[in-house]
Image (tube, rainbow, N blue to C red; front, side, top):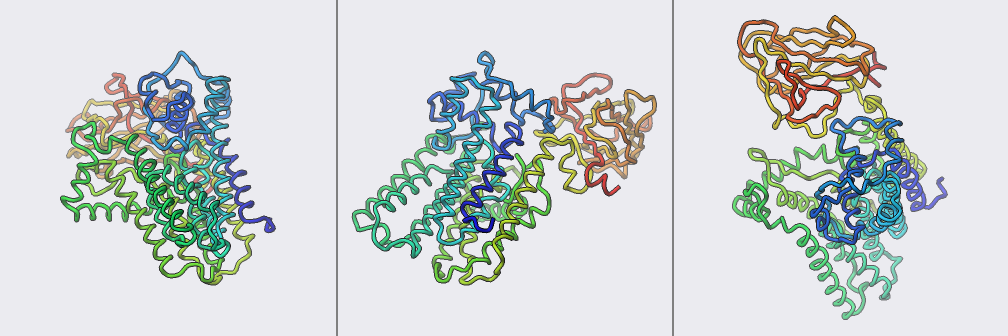
Length: 609
């Protein structure tokens, strides 16, 4: 293993572990995978600008919607039987939906995949699952090629590039239908090329071939996500003489400017013209947000700083890796081992005089511009929540492209940590194994995350639940609320109810769990007013009750006294947010569900007991 060249080792590693993730990740479970898949479907008809075809629909196959993991309101694990049933589903050409695409990126992100979709989906009418797998593998292969080239070209930081490319989030994105993997791969390749143009390996003699490569990579950078565009500043690191005589240099400057204006800015203006328009609520627009910045710059700076510092830990975690839409974290060891592996890759290489002080500072300045620019971009894209100082929409994966820019200036002049490369390889493989194992557990095993995280397994895992928009039901004398549910795990030892408001009554509350096959309550507890929070989760713990998995249970909430004042207001959803149960209030069936959760002893918690 140690005899392999760095680029081959990481290419094989990405291919092997990425292929496993391709197969075990449920269809549509990747971040924004459903909307990318819809964009590919639209482009397979020859439509390049998003929503120009689907907006005139319905033209989105219901089968795509049906097979998507995102349509499970509770994010339940996918059973072997369900997966086998999905494998045979084909496009139902008479059953189409309306769909609004959120993926507005440049068509090059989707061209090969659109061709695949056209052949497999529109011509051969193959099962949708098979199309999903082929599309995922196409993104994985492209990512492997880009990372292989980046590591091979880079004169320094080869292990750094490799380690950054196999971070869990990078592997997860590379194994799903996502524009992010190509975006990240092209950025890594561009940075590696800039380093190459600064190295002694590059002949001082002007090469037209290298001029064209630099120009094409510049053009490619303009097709990427908007927050990657400022990374073109790295071109200024390339020595002037390496871009040829004056006429070639001027030609490059003109080409670069046209690429930025026509491709980079032009495409984003065409597909995102809503940035300059009033929003649907007639109170929000990007221009209005920009006016806010100039009207009160100190408030904006405060909002920016508050957002960055309060959300930094979560974004760092998401930068390393989370599953899907941040529903599950990875094993805690991953979040310790990943930074240590990056640090080891940095300290294990000496670069002598490759970087002078000015170039190191320039790299960090570029990092700050892109990092802060990403937050500003989302401030313009999304209105801030009234009464808060938080910028919404930013995700940790958006900063994967900044890994090399941040870490390259830290490469020391001489080796500071002389360890064998095999330990870097073992560390990289260990992170990948834990990532694959964790995702298999959460996607295919009930309470899967409980096998690597302490505490109870808490279900159901809501997808769209919002306590702010939930309805309210007052629990007063003679009021009875019942919610049926079917536990997906054994050893139930906790019930949680969402309290919208606590009343001033001193009377206690009676909460019971009843089973259809038993005349006696499974659990019965009187909750005093002191135990009830003013708002938020009312947690009721009790001795674990075994053998409840897949049984029909009912949570019943009533006042413990038949006289007195209203006790609390419980929250419930207006729509069906729990498919395996129903809500009745005063024996009247409701469309929604009580906002509840139950906790089971599973995994590590069972081991501790």
